[in-house]
Length: 300
Ligand code: SAM
Image 1 (cartoon, rainbow, N blue to C red):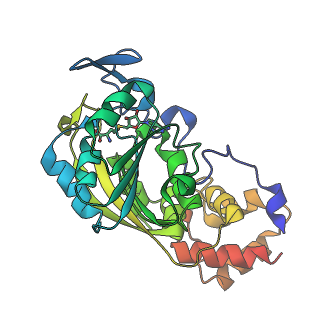
Image 2: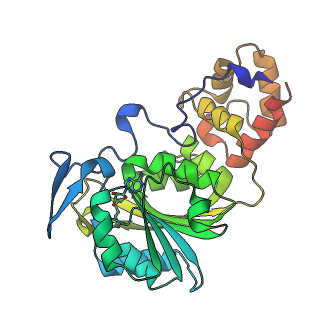
Image 3: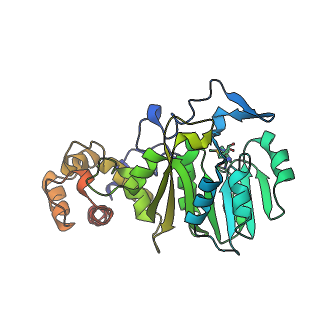
């Protein structure tokens, strides 16, 4: 197996990160904050480091909940209730909501204001055990803190056996990458890896004016339904990242860079056996093509 030669990526980024660290997910979404925190009014302070952009438009909140296709007996895990606007809509729709909020300053008000079927958990959603909190079957619905959306997706994938589906607001640009099809500009490792685990559906775009404070970019709601029976595939993750190593290069050249010990002729034969064109570029391959090619190269 040639995988020992693959460079290990930063663990929190490896599943879906496709940008250099300076252009990370969410880095431009909070520019309305001048310093670490800014006044919210009504006595509150918004914290830039927690990616706080709060929604209040009831039509958008209801649209998110409708898009989540929830039923009255459902349990929902919400990441980051903030001031509780989405939480309230969820609580009116399902029997149980567990809302994890990292900002301790928001906790007392949330506990005071929200109905009895909401449990407010103070903590970091990147650390907590979702199953211990919400049980073996729950839905995730959230307006995600964009600055930690990438590692949160990784956690949703890890807990996917217990998560029925995921409906989240994220940056529109990231949503477009998640749902992109082969050949599209937005198609990259993020598209392949999310689509390997899940079938994503694009819901709708939400403009900056819907949030307080306004982010600089559009947001969008997406929904993930897991593909059944997909095994964890850490090596596949590395493989896809490396196959996209240089988008302008042909696939075979990226593979040669990845596996310098495998002769070019062998890689070309693997590409052909996987049913992929010899001169294909990484963005031309479907998720299934990547799976076939990975399985082909795995044999060495
Ligand atoms: N749900 C609210 C809404 O739609 O108005 C707030 C959404 S705001 C974009 C993201 C929320 O996630 C903030 O309340 C923030 O404090 C919280 N948050 C940020 N990082 C978190 C983490 N690691 N774990 C839990 N909550 C987090």
